[in-house]
Length: 252
Image (cartoon, rainbow, N blue to C red):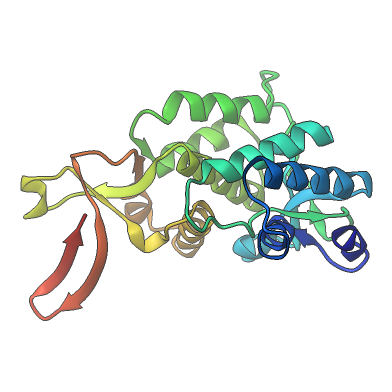
């Protein structure tokens, strides 16, 4: 299998073989899912584990890859969770290049997803509970940061990574970055969706982390980022350009 052979010199992306199955073999639906699952099994059997590139965290991480332990510890569990996440994106052209498969080495950072805090709570369990409890409410970015800092002893690049992970997971739950609406929009809306961060979970999470990295001391900026599920109280600009008389928005 070509994807397995590639492991000898490089990482293999989910998008790499998924797109190949679609364009070269015209697979779709259950048949496509089946062959994606089989490929993940083969990669796992040859020692590859799911990873993400550390490029988005380059200012704080000394590694090239980050192990994605949240998908599980057995190949069946890993394959099912990766496929579930892919299908949850609900995008006509989802970002399939977020998950890679790589044989772990010294360039691969293990974020210790299963570490426990002083109270014996596993980080993996804590994150799942946090997302379940908070995803139906409005969440402030500093809330995510502070609760991680208060519950776990993390180095800066570890903190960056787990905040990034949580933002991505919230995005899959339908939450989007927003800021409080100001006059004149505040007469009709409470929130403005911040589409400048991107339209995919990966883009949004990495751009917010990058912005946070650039402004560690600017607490005012950090406080301005919230996450919520857009509703009638949210103004959603899908296109905008700066004009002499201010900002022009097109609403859908």
